Amino acid sequence: MTHPVDQPQPPSGVPERGSGHRASALEAEDGRSIGELLSDVSSNLSTLMRQEVALAKAEVRQSGSRAGKGAGLFAAAAVGGLLFLVFLSVSAWWGLGRFIGNDWSGLVVALVWAAVAGGLAMAGKKEFERIRGLQQTTDTISKIPNAIRGHEEENR
Image (cartoon, rainbow, N blue to C red; front, side):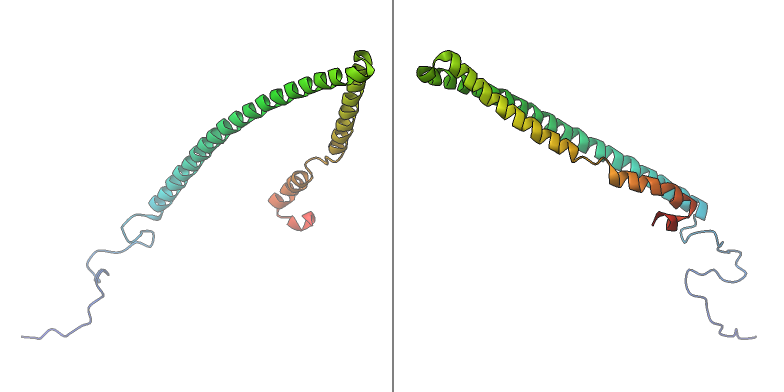
């Protein structure tokens, strides 16, 4: 009888030589191939993107609803403010009418409102003149073709 020679055993999980089980270089530890893993990654990424888009849509709907309500309230406040100014103007017209007559007081109130409108128009014109367009967006969009071609140094 011969005694078996004590040979080192492979670590657990590693197939023995000659057992017929060979771990493929293209298989994961759970036995799935790289192709299957990439398919799972692609599927998960697609699901994640769909969920992110759905979340963004829900947030936009909620924000849009609140913005619509806010705009409606501002419009109602503007109508109220306009009515206030109309009645204030009528009161000023009648108040001044006691001193200089209704004809002249109406003209004075109209001239005051013409001056206010002219001042607001000039301020609005200055604000429009300050508009420079979408400079940053134009700059970055013009750099995209060079970046795609790999010539990013031309963008500097």
